[in-house]
Amino acid sequence: MIRILKLPSTGTICWMIVSLASLSLILTPAVVQAVAPGEEIKAMVYQEIDECANPRPEWVFCNCFEDGNLDIWDDYDGNPPETNLIMEEPGPLDLAGNHVVRLRVPPGRGGADLVKVLPETYDRLYARWYMKWEPGYDFGARNHGSGLFAGDRNLLGAGAGYRPDGTDKFTATLEPRRDTRRMNAYVYYPGMYQDCVDPEGMCWGDAFPCMIDEGAVFCTKPQHRETVLPPVMQTGRWYCIEMLLDGGTPTSDPGAADGILNFWIDGLEIGPWDDLWFRSTPDLKITVLWLALFHHDEHSVEGIMFDNVVVSTSRIGAIGEDPGSPAEPSSWGSVKSLYR
Image (tube, rainbow, N blue to C red; front, side, top):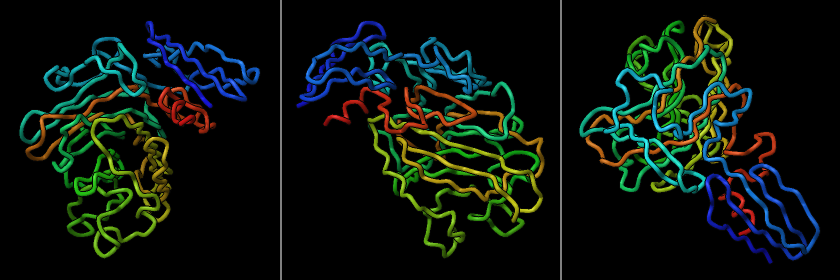
């Protein structure tokens, strides 16, 4: 028999009592230590509201919205609270006093976003964020989402229908398909082929995994179709989203391309795709993290909440998790799930 009791927290500290018939455990966010069988223990669990207070060396950016402002971001519009609101919300760890940012788009066509120009330029990066669609959000409204961008910041969001030339930009954002609510990456890059007027004409973003058809028109490269079906996204719950973008070897030969795209939803790996032609020059590197919600048409008032945003040169994983040890619990929710 297992008994787990979570008592009210004070500040960022909460208490947990764990009692098992044959084993008791001291639980910390990333450590499980066995103690004497049958002994009831009280374990102090430090659940940091702001994981950015102790960043890992490989993290190049981190924001948990606990500083009360968006000054660390680099938006030209100043992030008005009508669209970009810092608010108190329990967040992915269900903690009192936690803060998140909520993006809501005004009526009609338009968007709300957070732009971070990264401290350096990079060939390969991981980005992780937690997100929750508000109850009432309309997945059926055409939308675009969040991800990483390579190139001049002033090209961010520009050039719809334009195929990048290998020297100017490439970008990958994650968003739910409006027909199935399953996440895919929406990618602009020189190797675009899925939705082009002709080989040299206008193109709109490729989808990874490609789930538009079974290969008749759009998904003509089998290696880019789904091997793992992304889950159906729901409102009112938090998801841990992580992506990898790797520009690969610069080349003018699409057949030699080795750029990589991958993403994870609550630890479920959806890719990777490792034959993508992202660039022809080593000067084109990843420069920007872009958290965004864009709507083409009419849409719901409700938007998206974000928390615990990290950009890193190596895998990040869930809060408190060592990506090399996926079996370790990473949050109160995952700890509870082990003992249901």
